[in-house]
Image 1 (tube, rainbow, N blue to C red):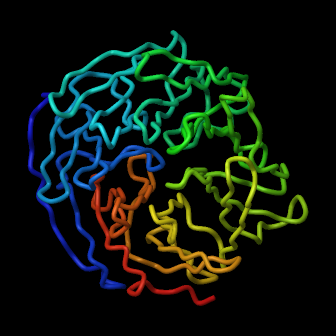
Image 2: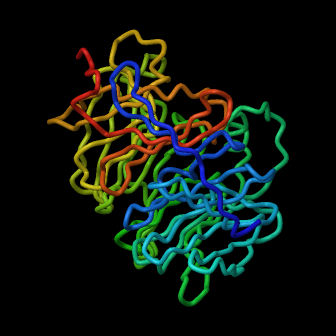
Length: 386
């Protein structure tokens, strides 16, 4: 029930390859994982993290305190959408969707409020908040009956892309409790993120095969302008996993080739200002890790694959730390995560703690999804051989 308190048994071990300390924060009581890693999930003082768990039979939201594993259940209803949840880290409020209803729960007294509903026939996608705690951003997408569902994480993405569902991007004014329609079109829109430092800027993507979409888009609300931030060469470049850095720059991952039909030989990360200026591209020595995120000081990155050799069939079993030098990225294998990659809740989706000392990630190693911390120790990583 809402308000119930649990204490998760915390266990510690050293990674067998690197000796890095890995801390298991949750204890196989159901499946537990963190919501989407580009959203705000850790409070401003680095005391706790927002998690989702089905430990009581249905998927609900919890806070977990780092120092002692205390978990507090903060929702208790059907239809909670964990990946559409976010923490106001400064005011200790959680926003989430339950079916079509946007909700909030105050963590000091667990008081719950209903804020708005999206229209019938649509599903909520994403939810993000700016640092001021005054604005949310999200999209809602037309629900469609699809025939390509196989149980895989992305099995319907291609079909949904070609079906062109109607999508609408919303910025929600929390103080006035009013939604503002930023943009809408017949495209599958997701990965909506509001800038942490400028609530006029919203980043979103066109979902679909990365080769066939102009993936990354930016909306500037005060100018009523929507534009592609990076002019992607369709069928020659694929760009995705977009995110905001702590200072409000935008990062993304890319691969490129010279001719249609060729192998993708160049892989890297892009960082760019929201006005399109100061674009920097960094190339990996081999293929790219996935789900890259940057630390708060913007000195180091993390990814949930570790391609440190030209031929490395098990690269998807490891976490990597990343250092940006000149026009290249130095890759170091940090630790094993050993996940199956079977579902979104088993994807590691790594992020830094606010002090940049640890990496938080999820993994279903052993069968159940759990949440882990790994020490962000560059010196202990196994460095790429190139």
